[in-house]
Image (cartoon, rainbow, N blue to C red):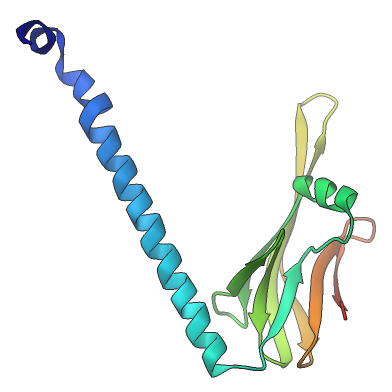
Length: 155
């Protein structure tokens, strides 16, 4: 036992004490943050039972899902406030109430490059006005050919 303690230096304390404490604190914070966000969304949905789901870049095919790995839409705000996000199966989205809303978002796409390993292009952040009706679902996506946002009803 004395040999182990005499061979251990002060720098090794990071590996056995400080790093595990940091990881435990990080996971505790992540769980706390997730529970608070879920509670916030649940309370908002109780206050607004006619809320509408807007999916972010939802695709209906497997190839579209695989291609979406190189494309990402980031919704920064809805009407100047933090969005209420949800996850349903493999799709993400946000809730809004029926009516007209301003969505601030940005789009990023990555493709293989010739000189560099990859080339990333970012559009935005920009604001788009969307109008939603109750009892419908919508898809909010980005058309890379026309370089514009597309907002359409799903059902």
